[in-house]
Length: 387
Image (cartoon, rainbow, N blue to C red; front, top):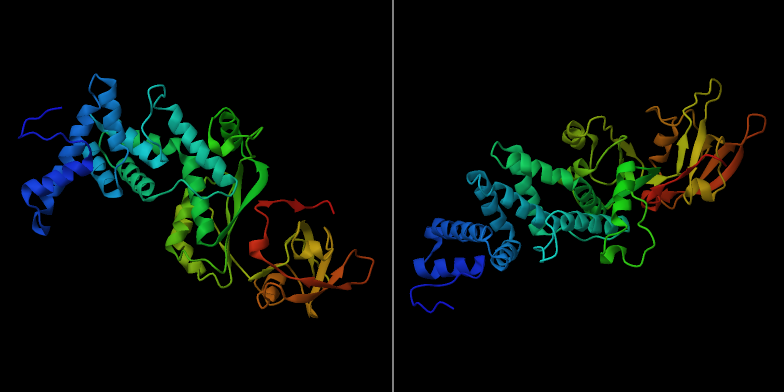
């Protein structure tokens, strides 16, 4: 230990800030001096990461991996100004983004980051909600700004974000659920998700411990903004993190507080997005789209298991002719005679009388149906078209 009275060893970024504050007698008017001290401390730690001694490099990396959200901005600034350390700084920001500590003696810099992403991904697919903190959000923002800039760090940051696209999607899914959205996956497998699942089979993580195989990794197909949505317009931004390979259908449920005009920016960010407004209640059917030339009606193409129509015994090819005595001419054509419009006045749990025709050569019969809530939609959308 160095006992020289005029020298102080800096053991952490916070120690450096405290020392700077005491030595300079900082007040609110000298905040810039604190920022300079902070930058100097981080730069000192970055220099120690190039030290030939492993223990010095590891200690410095561990200190940098404990930065708070404000200090990640200092790293970001350093990456734009110091091309020599740009790659190393981006690697640190990537580790902070993933939520991973500095590697130990037997770990590589690439594999742990990948496994950490998979660990979070698999847990969230099971319904978990962890992995995102103020630090991970701050690190992501720093990486995004670096990727959009023109410094030497830009392509490195862009590649780092691309490596964790699945992680970003799954954190977005967890946040959307927490804000009051229903996220529904397709029952068709996404090859990219399947490949990642296979890679994760050998990962030694708590999230998959004890399982014989990882869960199926499915792509998002539908998102319902439910009545209890608390995210406002700003929360819709999380939809842009979803990896949309075959289109996304967004439903705005009555009472969610989001209007179609509130989605204009979102539509610009997600090509092909066409949000649809829906009633608070649902039957749980899809229409064939067939246009009847006489007397109208809505032909059922498929039924969602467990929802209102399924529980009432409605099946594929049945034709809904009326709701509570009001004639139905089509599924959704924007008029008052459509099934969608008629259900706009109904509430979840309400019982309606449907006039249903099983086939063209029999008379319609009345069926009591207790309407479902959109929150009852299964997490994986399996539409039964065989019954």
